[in-house]
Image (cartoon, rainbow, N blue to C red):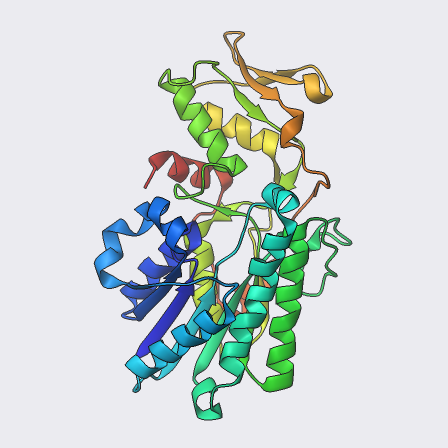
Length: 344
């Protein structure tokens, strides 16, 4: 029997991963923070009865240890125990406002998890595989393009710095203690379940509200239009997470599309899906997106600029494609945007 623990299961990635593992007949446990789950359970409602949800927090070392022991004791005949650590304070802009908390959850929380596993008997740890959700933000001000598994990290946000610490701790516990500890370096991945405060979902929701007359201003406020990102679909990326833990040895893999697009391009494509053709006037913070009827649809608000901006992210997924046979079903940015409009 295969069992899995997903931290951050109520998030975008966690919900899609839970669906995938249910299809593969896993027994699934999930850690949720009580206050978060009270307001953030919608993504799991349709599969709630098939999950074993436990309250927990990545900052609580003893609690994580107790959870691991509980799962092992309840499943003494397990063959493989897969742990997917997806829990994080994952909003880059917010990490500048709460850097200590971000570090405690995204960085030290991984150390807590690894320690809870390291102290178990070897015959148990030999059956445990751990996946850590890394991020392309770790590359920061990039030192080479495209970015691969060997590209040096150069983080420029508290979020990215905490994730680099977590990445390195996974490698240390893999090489120092022999744990099956793998990192996924995932470039931006979106879906209809993306949180409303992320720019892609903000754009999609903004277009829909304008289309249905729910936006009284008639426009969306955005920050840097010229940041370039490598955007894929979350369903493809959680499949990649699973493949990483099915590999015969622990390793680190980049998951990306190999294409990069500006935020401005995403905006144009999203509006075009609803029949609005956007052109641009002005420069800098005075730049605006205007539709074919002369109505302002995009304005720039400086409050959405980050203190340190990552201008370009572009991943090379060739290692994952070659070794894991990872292939994406959502091949283009238009495919992704179309599915985000579906709301499913």
